[in-house]
Image 1 (spheres, rainbow, N blue to C red):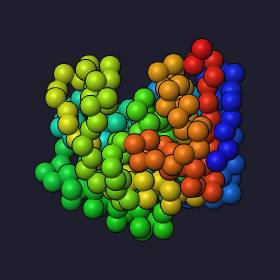
Image 2 (image 1 turned 135 degrees about the horizontal axis):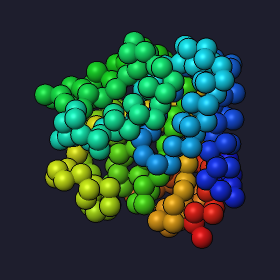
Image 3 (image 1 turned 30 degrees about the vertical axis):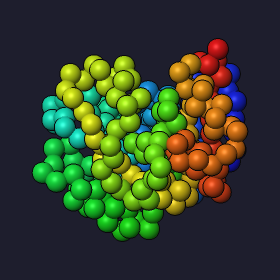
Length: 237
């Protein structure tokens, strides 16, 4: 694991963009796993800038959505789908045939997870996986637990996640989410974990202890041969 201590959110985002753009130059049709939320927003803005400067740069890139809440409708602006569409898919003009997504409204979330897992297999895995870290150390919706799931699955949301400010704003009681598993993440050729926000410091401190533990899912990234943890130190002060 490589850990980068950046002076600002902008510096953190720029470093992430440099890593992503270098990989796209090598493999234009790679599979890019996009996380929702505020942590990767700066990266996506820089990717949009690159697209505007070079409209064909992301012409072949494929995108897969990291996770999705269970229980929201397609009109909700709190879905991961809405976030990813607004910040990345529409900005880069990613066509439908190059985008894999957990459906927001599906009759059977378990079957939907199986479908997404099969899609990952068709691509022989993910090339770049973008992550944020939860205040309890979760990655995607892989929550602290006695054991973790390797593949796409329906996850039970942890009490700490449910008590977060964002969940309270949704207005709909949530208890589950569809998510890539830790096996999908660890099988990715490159992982970029953005850490920003004062509330993330306790989880970061535990991560940097270097101990692998299932009650801190992010710690499994120590097992990855090409994991980059990029920290916005200014936000922690």
